[in-house]
Length: 208
Ligand SMILES: Cc1cc2nc3c(=O)[nH]c(=O)nc-3n(C[C@H](O)[C@H](O)[C@H](O)COP(=O)(O)O)c2cc1C
Image (tube, rainbow, N blue to C red):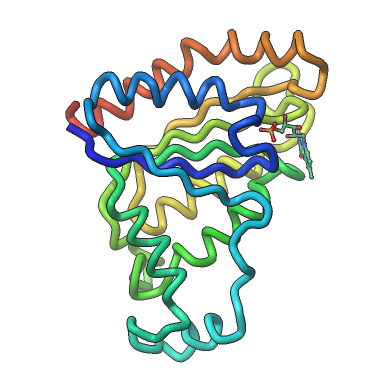
């Protein structure tokens, strides 16, 4: 039974984003399957988190103690993630990759000695695997027969989450949203089954 889920809202439109209906139906199912589950929302879009400060950068590079106040915000965001049994990332594609607001979250959450350990073979994650659903909204196409641009979002996001220990990640792509309301509805219909499948695959990981 899952107790907490964390939703990262990364669109400038937050819950009014084009991908929201997909996320909302997934959350409704999550609540049905896990009565009493607490769903926490972290809105990353404007005004967003502050950019990493010099104090934060210095604390990282100096290997400052965990209780250094420069790590306060980073600690809060990491604990919020650690307390979650499922992570849902609702994000647009901005210039072929994640939006800036999600990158700032990354810069606080991927933290040396706290969420990953450096080794000669690469960084090794310290968090447990948290099943993660990523719903990506894009104006154009980056997957399938109509793809005409690269997708730097998924490989980057997966690599970054893998670095801290999150391995079970499922993507749902709502594409072609820049072509009017009919296209939005088409994309929502298209991704309905995909979302159910992605959600079920994540449940299999958690043993639910
Ligand atoms: C700054 C910016 C950059 C964008 N870059 C891309 C892009 O690289 N590829 C793409 O297909 N759409 C791009 N778009 C379009 C958005 O992905 C599209 O509007 C999407 O529907 C936004 O989803 P949302 O309503 O959830 O915010 C961009 C939009 C903005 C505002």
